[in-house]
Length: 321
Image (tube, rainbow, N blue to C red; front, side):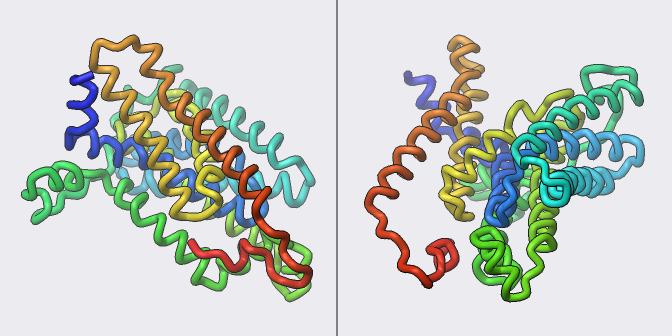
């Protein structure tokens, strides 16, 4: 028990939480934008995997990590747009189409890596490099705080900035109001001149780009190579964070941070004399407990909340972040 407390209370553990939470935060905020636009982006996992593979390959062949990151993010956005075409124009079920795209991404990335490098495991033979870390000249000398904040990857800082940016977009920008209106009542939005499909495609593009940034972090931030299946279900866990956070930016951010904490704890405890099977189950057990809590809270709220009078806007259109 003493060893566990030493791990949890260390500055290294707090720094690890920020790094491990980065893909969860980015992907979950992307999932939030799509969900609020009325198109559940089940393909977050596929967007992450596509971006991780594309980023590592482009960076390795071009010699530029920034070109790799840009192409990876674009790849994630394109997969989300493909989901939009399948669902919005061809009428495919969003859940089925999303799962299909995730399976397609898993197979396509593995095949691409094998076709280019002759390796079924990943791109370890290809030197792709990593995105830079950000050092904070004054803060890094502060005991405790410097060890936690200074030296984090640039995408970790992007993830921390993404939460207020998404909150501003949803609640302060005109596009955000259109997005929420389309998600709440598409027919009403269409009746006042809002192009519903255009708003939904833009939301999906942003959603896929954020998930793509999460995937790029995995292959060009946490490590400097791509491994087949390296997302390991993080896209699905990010979807859980969307609903656990009550579809609000700061709630989703905190939920994703909670999942990141669970994974960071599992990583740290893996160095101790604890059975590896028990340690590796921590993030998934945390996910199940969190979803059970969410379901209980939602059922309790539905019993106590009064119904909205006819003619008044939905509570989601007048809510705060």
